Amino acid sequence: MPSTPGPDALPLTGSARTLPKFASIGSPYFGILLAFMAVVLILSNIGASKGVAIGPVITDGGFFLFPLAYILGDVISEVYGFKVARKAIITTFALSVFASLCYWIIIALPGFDDEFGTAKQSALEGALGPVPLIVLASLLAFLAGQTINSWILVKMKARTGEKSLWARIMSSSVAGEFVDTLIFCSIAASVIGINDFAGFVNYVVVGFLYKTLVEFLFVPVTSLVIGYIKKREPSYAA
Image (cartoon, rainbow, N blue to C red; front, side, top):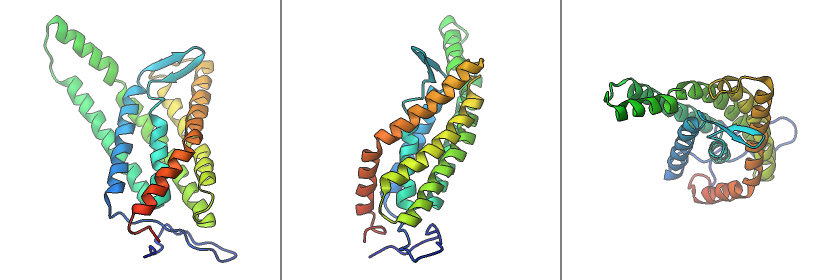
């Protein structure tokens, strides 16, 4: 049976349009998407503590992971709506903060005082020590960027219904990724060792273009995943 329009079915003025459909959380699919989203973000936060230089390009070690979090956010927003996507964002970051707290405890625990233990402690401090600041950068950036991304996607769906999925994904991605990248890089740049303005601009521009390009290239895959879940969500399928 068709799903009943929920609170994410945004009211429209003007000519009558069919309210957009969204699935309720009642199958395993949302839990799987949420788990992937959390793991991707936690790993990207660890990777982001390392500065990476590929020729003239300046980025961080989480560059290949982070766009996946936005792709998963697109899937959740399109299938389940804005309110569920917002819960996913908050849950993901609660888990990320918990992971950061665990890193702090691990570093603070007394280790072996032999040569190996000292080297291991130094390595942990260098790898995981900056992560809380990276998590703070990600928290502020992802909350703002992903919320904008989700809101635009759902708002456009209210106007287009099931049509023009590619346009919703691409339009929301540009806005969300720009806000996310600017906020994240402003906080994280000094953490990974970028201290000059030219390097900062490089970091922001490369990050924004790269993440947006990845999302654009993955639009066909994202659309297939969205279609797959829509057909199998009992509360969504018509």
